[in-house]
Length: 278
Image (cartoon, rainbow, N blue to C red; front, side, top):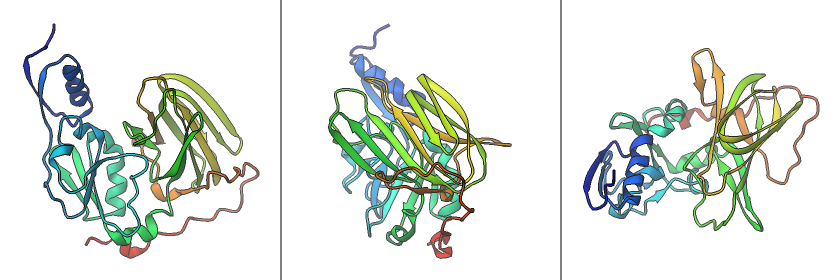
């Protein structure tokens, strides 16, 4: 059945199914009106939002310097406040944001949510998370992200005709922990006493993260396919995002320490004031 030239209203266009449905209808030359959640046109800080909310012209209606969420803007620029708008695809991260930013996580509709970063947060947020490197031929990009969570979160202005190879590096400060990596492409996980690899479309690679270890996770994406790479921790309550503060970033040029575990040293604690509601 063709929708060419027909008018179609898609509700829930900020969700996984709705965003893909609207995109398919546009390819079929339908006149699509996509209904998603609304936010203030001029929020108090720069607005960065997940790509599903921008496919259908919402970006052009915001005049405050809004941008798609990408690997290179997921942590706030030095000294600047940022508001992040996440869709239901990022529901896994919401408990961690609520833990670190009480009073600054606000629901939007049934499943989306806003997180307000203040300028003062710059002094501590970069202590945690992952460094990343993206490579395509001679083209290289590098930076830092708070989570290993990538669903339509790629790089802006990164021309690449073939698959991109991404590497995330961090030190894990937790105990031996069962985890899974959900991905598409070819994945290699390296840590102390651990080297596993797997390939395919929408695969789940289960592994046990060794205690107090450097870790490298490399994913080479599939041609003509958006990056998918999500690290999850196995808990008695089900799969969840690993604790943000248990990963500290490793420099891209620093060799991994894969020897015997050093005496456990907890990462620097988050300043108490950082978790206070404004």
